[in-house]
Length: 502
Image (cartoon, rainbow, N blue to C red; front, side):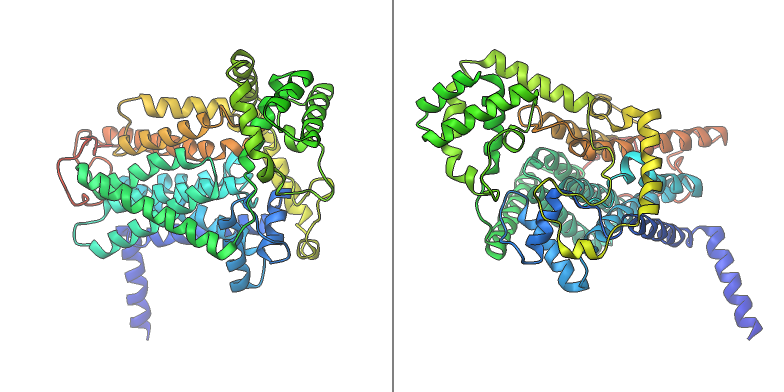
């Protein structure tokens, strides 16, 4: 018996010394961290948007496409499996920390450093990342889905040639995450495109034109099929929520008198003309610079979610008739809203479960309130950093990071191409808000903040690993990144980048 115990202990010590045990230790640490974060946020912080989707997920309200039906359907599935609406916030934490574990494992294999691999996990506790981890928002879902694809792509790249089944399984999982990201955020397509390219390049380092076309076709088919399946399953009411954008532009660029004239020219009804004029007047009087439809536009009681669907054609016609004539005012207004998004983002910390005035908090949420002690502890942590390091919560900083990631030709470490594509995803996502930003909100730059933080962490880790290797007299060695560097991915042609040296 003692001999068996001794052999077991000897085996564990050997596994610890040679490093085979450390990825499992990282997994345990990531699981513990994810559980701790999920506990702080339990049962999930809900905004008015997510509260509305909870009503739909529980079947207490008909679904509509004002918010993504795919998210409500996922929530419904989780509730049916677990019986608890808090499962959504727990899944968010699991996806984030699972992705960070995959990146930490790759860092360990390349650097042979336990400290550097743990540094990757520390990203999850960064104040500008953990602040929204348990908030049930489509912006958070987009960010974590894209991060998961990034982690999958790097894992696929490092797989040995004989792991064919694993490679294809991971690629399929990555495509599913990408399709979900494309469906969960209406303006998330620009951010999805570079990450899709990253996944393709992980599978085939030098794909030809046919392979690119085939990959694009498969991905497009998956997205279309997924969208069709969601529509069939949810049968959501049409809202054409995009019409809030022309409402914003019209009532802020035109004067109330010009709004009335424009509405008459576009064939708007008398009631619609009066509401548009009232919205322009009210926004001007209260100095409201954005989100006019929800802040200034006279609404029916109860809120009519299909109103825009019935009037979208008139609003679009008004916009196309008037904005070319008032292009200077339009450019000035959009520049004003975009710069406010970049420099004055609000809602850096969502303080628990709230709803807007007039909205209904679901009884399930009332029965399971958040833990005030943990909420206040997290709020103190986050708001302390908003005071001391405010740029972490501002769009201009992450816009600058994404620009640097894209423009620099080479980064330390083996992931130059991947980091540039990650920066491209963030850059396109931020720029997509230039003509569409409804208001100034930190959650709109959450994906750039997450991707930028991960990119900066990987760059810093590679720089430290290179410095350590140089100090050890191994600089220039093909395996300078560490003794546990992973085997190369299968080659479909010469690698585009020759920066496999950290």
